[in-house]
Image 1: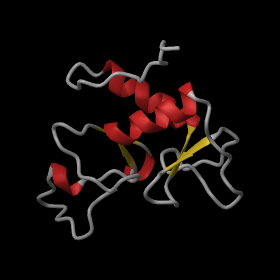
Image 2: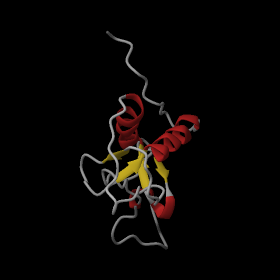
Image 3: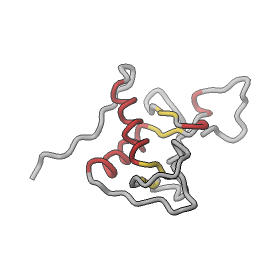
Image 4: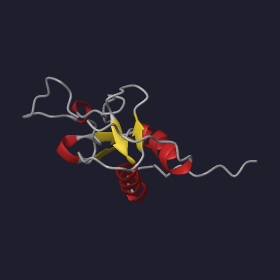
Length: 118
């Protein structure tokens, strides 16, 4: 998402914010963009991936809700932001975003792995 009051003629990294936590894009906080400028930051992506993919915790979107990232109604389980209830993403988008960041050589981010501790 774009920060309110963004100067489109002089946009900065800090003008781009995560739709799920509203923190700005920085060199340390990578972003993945979805449709229509929706963004998920690496911090939120870590939590969403762990919950949806590793722990299989997710819930369906209600009929009037859509995934912020793809703007589609999907039957996939969704991850809902812990900070902004209206912000949710489907499992497909979270997996795709994780693949993008994981492969980006300029970003020090890796998909969360299942714990091997017992």
